[in-house]
Image (tube, helix red, strand yellow):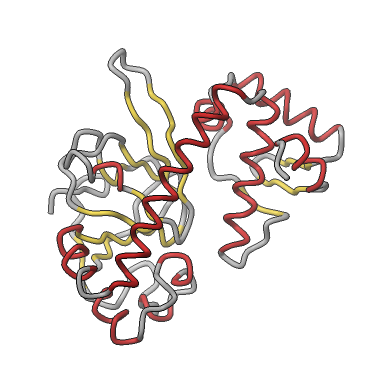
Length: 251
């Protein structure tokens, strides 16, 4: 196995998840996000047969490294993963955050090497899906192939949106858009999109949005004073969605 969860943790294969032994792909509460809804029970079983489930990835441990040979895509089951790219001058750029039910690792498809490193922001459980076996299975399951294409399209759209935000949007607009994005993603998991915990640090947020930590702190204080959000350490409550949408310039 070429990918590593920190330091080459072996994986087990089959329907049981070490982090949640009673849960399989078929009855996972995240399957509506991670899997195509159209898959039949026997088709889910075929997908489940190729999924590798490793030990939990501890906070700050790496799922895979930048420039590592690409062999699999990954689904977050528990926790949160950030992706980071190290530039030629040695600077780190946070390129994404991934929550339960979301797929990451597709950056390695084009050149067979990962262009980012994937790091756990907290203790996380990750499903590893070997890409060659996923390709084989997709050729016989059109709904799975379509779903995967949709995931890739979403990744491209998200990258384009981030580029637009960083080049044109104000600092306050970027922050508001991030809160709305996280809210929507929590709601998609049938969790509260009003009150949630941000697992990333302010340093990660500022890096991702192209801002300074001081600017992030200043905007958070401003949004709290205006009673648009409430922030207690990493706990966030959105108090006024309409105002937040107006700031983010979202219809």
